[in-house]
Length: 109
Image (cartoon, rainbow, N blue to C red; front, side):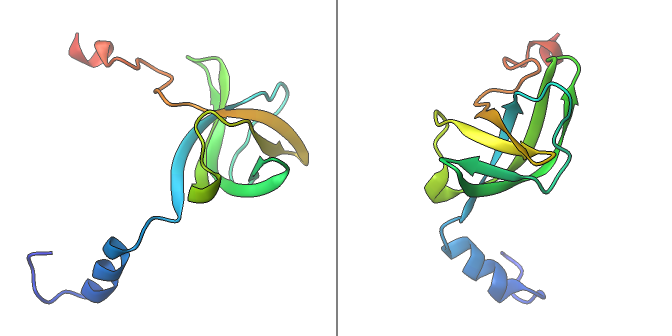
């Protein structure tokens, strides 16, 4: 923002002044035979609360993982969510910690 004239400066200022509408989350889903891959709805209390941007099976964690955006008003890290995978709502939970090496011990040696 130090540069006085760049394309999109006004839009960037407006965006910074607004409250965020969505929260980026990582979720694990109870999906035995299929995984989320993207564009699946995230549900809370039977209502659409967001959408999956990407997903797949995390081999190290041995869990089905989905990343996506949840509306701020529907965000609660302790709430029960569902991800609709192949038309079937599957239970999902927000992961507050990274699934792989949450304490960063591997990178520190």
